[in-house]
Amino acid sequence: MIKEIIKKNIKDAVGEEAEIFIPENEKFGHYSTNIALRLAKEKSKKPMEIAEEIINDLRLTTDNFFEKIEIASPGFINFWISEKTLQNELKEILKNKNNYGKYPQAKSYKLKAINLEFISANPTGPLTIGNGRGGFFGDVLANILKFTGNKITKEYYINDAKNSTQIRELGKTGLGLGETYLTPELKKTISTLKKKTARLKKKSPDNIAGEAGYLLASEINKQNKKFVEKVLKIKFDKWFSEESLYKSGVVKKILSDLKKKKLVYEKDGALWFKAKQFGDSEDRVLIRSTGEPTYILPDLAYHSDKFKKRKFSKAIDVWGADHHGYIPRLKAGLKSLGISEDRLKIVITQLVRLVKNGQEYKMSKRKGDYVTMEDLIKEVGLDAARFFFLMSAPDTHMNFDLDLAKERSMKNPVYYAQYAAVRCGSILQKSKIKMQKSKINFGLLNTDEDVSLMRILARFPEIVEEATENYNPQVLVRYSIDLARQFHNFYEKEHIIGERPELMSARLGLIKATKIIFEILFKLLGVSYPKKM
Image 1 (cartoon, rainbow, N blue to C red):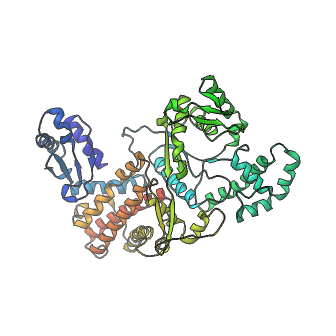
Image 2: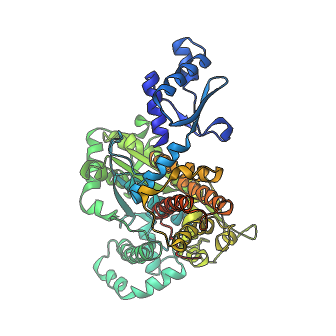
Image 3: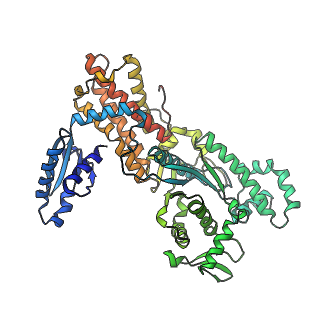
């Protein structure tokens, strides 16, 4: 990884870790650092003097790695990578193929057992576009973390506790005693389970609504599971039932432990948790005056199961926008159980607005005024849905442009990226030349477009690292568009087939390396690699 090599060389020179970044304007280098500015006060020297000392050391120890190194006022050090370095990196891509970009064994990186929970939609109806945004984010993040060697368990949490308000309300709807969750989809499910719900009236007189709701939720979840696996192409390792936490006694044990630690008290007929004592803004109700637990109690039991029973070193929860205020109370609860809040990462996905002809668009009319993922996939296709959702960081509100997502032209970002990849395959197929790697002279790749394409390919491991360290799949999408743009520029300006044999062979090697990176990218993003377009 080029950035890591620069960091190592600087550390060897000054004994300090340097921050390396990529300047927006190439006239300031391919890479840059402010290490001299940071060390100035510590060493009581001018930044420009320190920068001069550093680059003198680097020139002695980095033979032909850099094309040039320059100092820019007030003390930045700017690096330009040599063509030779980029050509060597190109050889690494062709050598390692689909393993290129994975963290090398020598890298000091602690691999983790990570529980990644996402979608976890309430089992009261079909998945919405909000669920889809979190679903694609979680699935791609899991792919990235696996790619870099972590052990990932993808998990779907089913909110199906019989004593919860939503399940009892669902049951009442199913029994004809309410209409809280009544939708066309639920009417079909109720009709399918009519005989079973009728039998519940005789068997469970004390909690008919809860039993009926649980039965309906199980059927709805079965339908959602089929949709997730068959249509969204997301495979979960575990589907975890909230009701199982009550059956196993885990919820009861958590409550008992909190009572033993004197962390609960009674007020207004309810049982309260001393959350403020652990960093929350106020104390929180654990059990309402009606005897029904709030979400915090089973959620503490659930996360205790993750950390204490199943021994995950890290848990990542992907939640919808309406859960933002819930983060402090859960982290406070974990602290009370002796679990460090650093072990839990919560990602909030913001709302999605569908846009058509520049205006907000309601794709379907139904109770609750929501749009299902099924509607969206039918409208734009899976690749476009995945790619468009992943283009925006999860913590930003997004407008989903339906017109653009359906367009089969270079204006459509996913089409643009896929078309570049297809071009790579088409050129290699047409060339009908078997490249002998040992005889390829990559030193012939020296035009601006050759070098620019090699440079963006060499950045791929850095992009993977950024996506891994920051839990941010968005950078892969942005990179795939940048790579496509650079390849299209290369294709339009440089001759390939028909060039003299030595140069043609070198450029075919460059195209093959580009195809390898597209293959890795699309696999990580869960986007298809078409054979033709």
